[in-house]
Image (cartoon, rainbow, N blue to C red; front, side, top):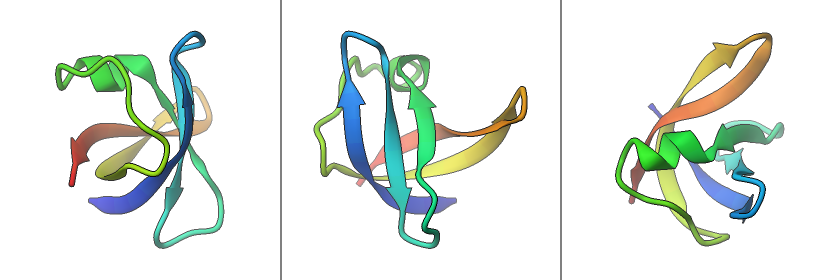
Amino acid sequence: MRYGTVKWFNTKRGYGFITPDDANKDVFFHITQLEKIGRHSVQDGQRLSFDTYDDRGRICAGNLSFL
């Protein structure tokens, strides 16, 4: 489990990026990961925990949980 802050999220496009606490490179996340936990959006600056997974060569955030 990793921790980070939502850098930005675009509800119209359905994706955004998380700035992890432990790395310099932002991590992509898709709205489907939010929908899995019953959410449809997230505010910029929101703190959360997440796991990463490989999605066709791209590292993505999943298993999101709000802090």
